Structures are given as C-alpha cells and as structure tokens.
Length: 339
Image (tube, rainbow, N blue to C red; front, side, top):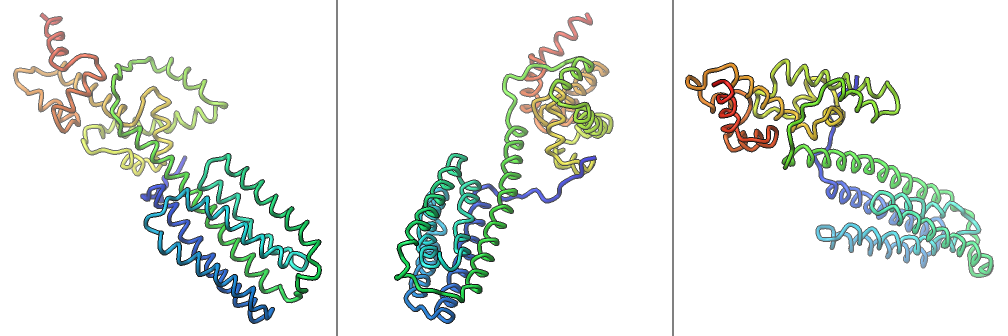
C-alpha cells in the first residue's frame, strides 16, 4: 500500500526558489561576517578581514535592495559567476596553508542544478575547475607575497560548516521544488477541459493487456491495478461521483494513497485525467437514470444534479464530450428506438 502524503506543499515553484535563495544569502552573510572577525582577531590580518567584511556588506545590501524584484535566474547567474571569483581570491591567499578554502566553491554546481538548466551544471563545473587549476598554478609564484598562516583551523571549520548548510538547503529545496512541479503538472491535467474527448468504452480485458505493456514488471502492473480497484470501490460502488465537490484529494484521504499514484492509475486505465474519469461515471449514471425512469414524471435537472453535475451548462458540455451527442439528442434517439 502506498501511503498518503499529507505534506504536499501549497507553495509555488517560484516561492520555494526565492525562499531558498534568501536562506542561502543569510547563511553566506553570517559566514562571511564571522570569517572576517576570525581573520581579524586570529590571524591579525586587518586588510584581508576588511575586504571580506566589505564583500559581506555588499552582498547583504544588494540582496535586501532587490529581494522583492529580482529575477531568479539572473541573480543565480550573478552569484555563480562572482562568488567563485571571490572564492579564488581567498583560496589564492591561503592555498598553500589551507586546502579547506576550496569548500567555498562546493555549492556552485549544486546551485546550478537546482535553479538552472542541466547544461549550466556542466558549464559551472568547468568554470570552478578552471579556477582551482588557476589558483594552484598561480600560488606557486606567490611564495613571498603569501603569508604563512598556521592558525586556520577555526576559519576552515566555519567555511566547511557554512557550505555544508548551503548544500543541505539546496538539496532540501530541490526535493520540494520537484514535488511542486509534479503536483502542478498533474493539477493542470486534472483541471483542464477534455476538449474533443470521445467516449471511451473499452473492454476491461483488452485494457489490461494494454496496461501491461506500460510496465517493466508484473509487480508494477499489480500495484496500479490494486490502486484503481480501491478507486473504483470509492467512486463507483460507493457513488462518490454523485458529490459535485468530490476531489482527488478527498479520494486520496479516504483510501490513504498519494494522489499522484491515484492519478497515474486512473490514466493507465484509459482515462485522460481524474475529472474525465469522474465525469464518465456521472454520465453513465445519467444514462442509467434516463433509461430506468419516465421522463414525463422526473426532470432532466433532477437526473443530472443527482448524478453530480452542479449546472446544466457543465452537464451539457461533458455529456457531448463523452457521448458525442447532446443530452436532448440522446433522449430523442432513445425514444425513437423505443417507439
């Protein structure tokens, strides 16, 4: 059994990305501020501490200034370009005495993976690789200009901790962003009108044979078959489709199965979406009531409202989409055949 997930985010992809960027900037600012303090008091290097502190102020000020209006990809590109350059400056200064400074560039390819297209991951990986090679080569010629610091343990620990936190944030929000993308895609499919959909009346045995072709193993096929049986039990046998406000979230809650799996099981059983499946069940019930009742004694409004349709316009549209003719034409053909 696939358990229901109650933690599907209501945030948009854009909201999550902005929140992730904000947290990363704040972690960077705290790390840079503490780093400059450590450099000043531990290593007694006022100039280097001042440069680091200025970078911290510029980063924080520009972010606060633009945090409500910035374009996500533009800001990410700027960070991924300029942060490795500042990291190169730090690495060049400490390279011979502390390889830990290379951790400054650790989040760069991960950030590109989360916020940008796949090609940029390779571009920025090559970019930081060239920077590391450059620092390695240039540092060989700075034997006189680079001070020999032997007290970099605390600074290295801070750098490592800051960048590990940033990596964890990136991975955490990457999962949330992916979940939101999946849900958004399904919701778009579930809420979109099924324009031009024709009636789907397929023999269940034939349908199962088609479904088996979509799976690499009988285990997957059986899993989704079991899910759809649970769906049918709630929707068709318990007549949940008669509730005009019935949603896939309610169904998911009742059978304790994630709505993503429900949507897939429905689609793999020949229906284009959850709404299509529900409407198909409603139309079948409408036809059943029409066939079983005397239309001179009950109204069509009673029939479609008791089948789950909240308005006549929706009923007429869905009926024609599924049956290919209007309700009036269906009733006329039915009465003509009887007569």
